[in-house]
Amino acid sequence: MSLTTILLMVLGVVVVVLLIWGFSTGWSGFWERISPFGSKSNIDSIRSGCNLACASSNQYQFCEEVRIVKYGKEIKAWNGTNLDNVTQSPGTCYNMTNPTNYPGVNIPSCSSVNCG
Image 1 (cartoon, rainbow, N blue to C red):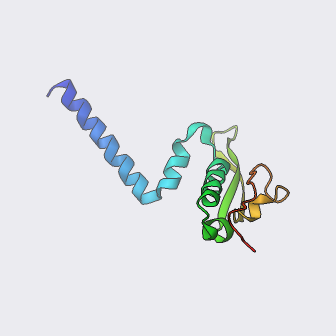
Image 2: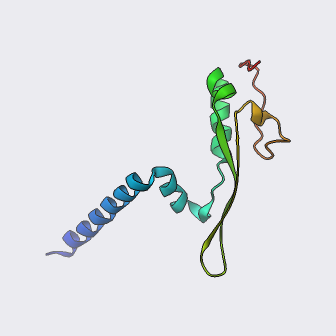
Image 3: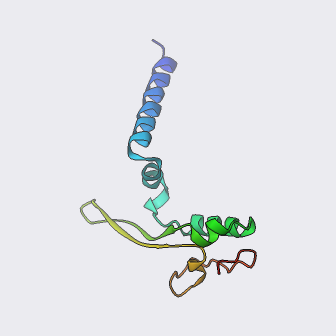
């Protein structure tokens, strides 16, 4: 067998293992584990989703859909174990326009959607 064939077989096995792991444990857990520096904060994605909901005047997504903001990141202990230092705060985009309850999220109020 040639070296190229062996490398392609190893690469194929790695891809199959990653697919099985992703489908069995869930893709969100998979991406959190391979993301840089073990960051578990999702503030940027929440902000983008809320801005998109406002720009498209989607009242349900801005006023009623509950999103969970995660603050913090994974911390390694001295013995190598992972300490999960993540605070979660559920709320809607409308709720997150209040900077007191959701510090650092910075969702601007949306004039095109009436949450009344």
